[in-house]
Length: 114
View (tube, rainbow, N blue to C red):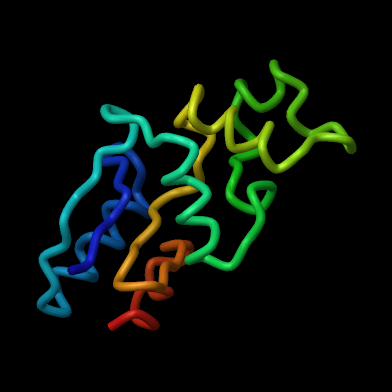
């Protein structure tokens, strides 16, 4: 089963979903802004992506700036907690297949999973 953590307002997320469908994959769609992820799910995704929370957080978002999330001493747990509280901070889209995941930036990254 393939799953996409999707934001329909994001062009990269829409392009990634279109690419999956063009490859014959109809993923389970998680609208993570409507149903925010919990800390365990985010930590699990980070493990599948093989990246740190700092690499998944969107630094351009106002919530990132307002909450001083770019400070040098911020912990992994603090960043994950911020992504739980402010789901817009999560880089998108994330596509998961089995024990692997990729960021759809660029959308062609998802071809690694197929």
